[in-house]
Image (tube, rainbow, N blue to C red; front, side, top):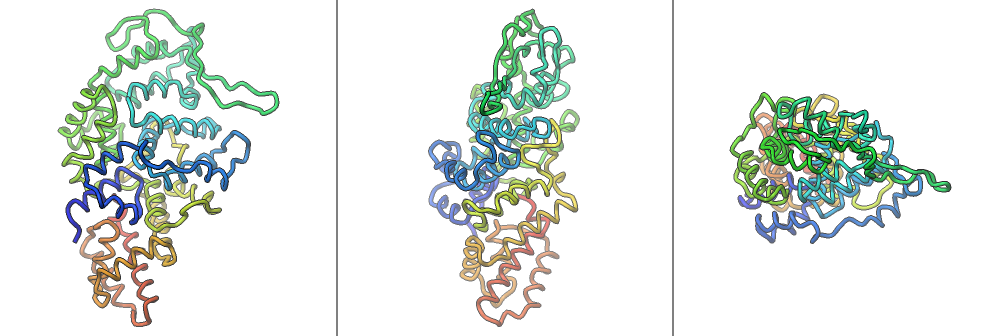
Length: 462
């Protein structure tokens, strides 16, 4: 049986990363839980993923520009291979909130650049992140701020900044949206053409001649505000702090109702949100102290298997667990599209609201795709990660007792707890197979048991 600290460590790595291999877990096992949290919070001390290796084997179709497919491939590859686990998870967290899609942009490089920005600032200061977001060309185009002029304000960016990125519905007025839009006039981007090489990457540009310099009244404050001033006022609102910490709770701790329901449904753990919000304010809106407080809290450690895995977590976690696609591989182009078949088209969310998470990830078609992707790999006894799991089961289980095999398989897949009826079905399946044909047959029997566990409802949680 695993120690309490080992169970908590595995839980931490399921949530703070996108899955880890058994080898990575064994490496982490030499340090304490608290030391692991600090390691996660210092990605700059960990080996980064090899960009040069990626581009050597997966070159871009056009010099200097990504297609959407290549940008998706690049990020899925990085999420699978980078050892800066939490940095990548936080980039995905912000992509969920600051949902921007290539369906409108039709510019994979702009989406790739936005993720780079989220990666760079996603664990830093929230004020800085919001300012960088407001300057991000993909976001500017996504919410039409290039059409926001001093004589004809466009409210799209201002509305979503307040509704979906910082405060939530009910904490601002229509007047506040209009005044916010005025403050961000002149914030636009340029994509000048090069006479030989075509379009250059989009770049932020501030046009002072197009900025509304008039007095504005926003959330009870009056002044000649520009965009930075608006963000400073937003940060002072208690609703802002609670809005972001509830998102963090929803993403890392336990599934909350969908965001549109938040004005009418309180958090499942109000004390946790209050605690994280206090840390957020005291840290002057730095994200790392909030993450440290969250991961070290009892409410996080006790929330085992209370979150449905996102499609990205299913795919990346499976690849890392089984050791499949470890490095450049011609199959990456196809595998990078697999989350789309499960309901998560990375870099192309369905709307500015992003994806509906939790149980919303599960429907009949998505469930079948999830199960098949995992089971196909867990049944493959040639994959290095599967070989490692099988060896552990053979070492720790009584191979003549079906219950012992099932218990060991569940332990290898994360100390998983399943319903009695499901457990009994796994036992019956093992007992119905003649395992007397040698070691190879026993290996496949263990692999088939692992694949069957992947089809349980409990395995869909992390």
